[in-house]
Length: 88
Image 1 (cartoon, rainbow, N blue to C red):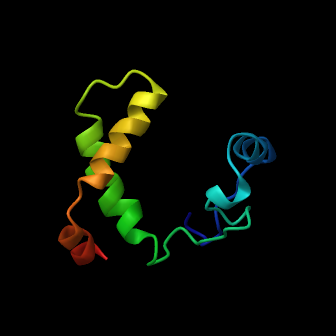
Image 2 (image 1 turned 120 degrees about the horizontal axis):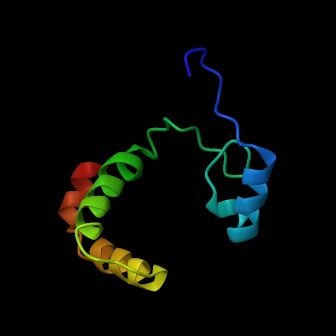
């Protein structure tokens, strides 16, 4: 966005997110947990952790949501604490 305006979420999208998730699980200015997209608090998770997990998880063959959840849990638990400390 070149004019610096914050992103907007359409009403049908907000309704869908509320139907599937609690309000406190959605990070958006349109929900109670209103973290800005470029917050330094979110950067490690947004960029480093997401990229790491995406590389590790999508390398395998995951067919169902339970398989995806199990794979995410396994890979997050396997991350070394020192790597996490260095990231944050």
